[in-house]
Image (tube, rainbow, N blue to C red):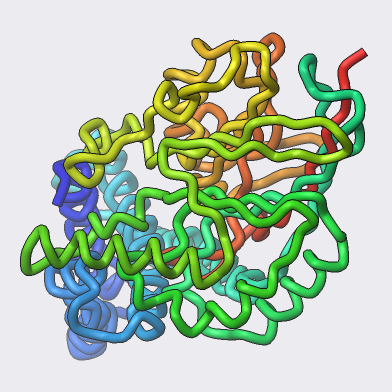
Length: 408
């Protein structure tokens, strides 16, 4: 586990324990009732299993994916609730000590007010997140027109469907997926691209969904790349051989889906007596463990993907992590459009005409939608599936239709 995760979890543990101790007896007056209240508040600490459940959550070796996903959701909601309650009570206590010292105790009315306020502050986001559970399959069909300098005039109006981050191991329903595939096919796009994270951890997760997603159709086919979760780096393996076998099984799954997987390589798309190059790279990331190669030997390599291509040929790049755009892609001026996913928009945020905010923006400056730097564009898909929290608040799952134009 990373240092950041351990520090975050330590804070959660502290806030949960503090909330259990403080909030319970603030609600009641008698010692007998206070003891019962403490047990009620402390029960989730035992049920969730502060140090045991996270190990299960991040190794996925004991329970099924569906149950695992719901436990992640419950754990995440409890983290928010108890952390907020504990932090409010702790800050109130510190403020009281600064103003009055240890000898002056808060009145019964103030104590009860603090307990109710802290519970309310912790409860509002939890209720919001619970409401977001109904948004897991509420697909939003977005459309964006992009004018590219080198785009062939004969291909003006070329339509690409962009999806990303299926995370098939998290799905609990199939009917919405079938309906989404039908809606995508009804668009009759020229090309469909998938920008990584087909699974959460193992290739087995996608098997029951192959009959559904193999029905995706576009005039010039479906192309795909891998995301960070596809390499199996988030769970332990018996050996490197077992991990590699899982990866090769995932390669075969892409073949069974009828998707052309691009691994540091390119494909030439020809249409209307014109052509362009579609590049796809292995996962590239610059945060934490992925500063190193995700699978010891494989790392996104744009130069390798461009081998044998002429400099003046129009190029579109598929790269899972949008951080790749600022870090490397901008140095390749012949790549005018990059398509990414990865962030999910944190599955939480606000997007309207007045405010655009998500926790993702603190980790990824380019976290959702269309971005432009001079003559180069990046589109970050908000993700089709979900991970951890089995829902979405404010940032809905996305299917994107990109309409490409010749810049005049």
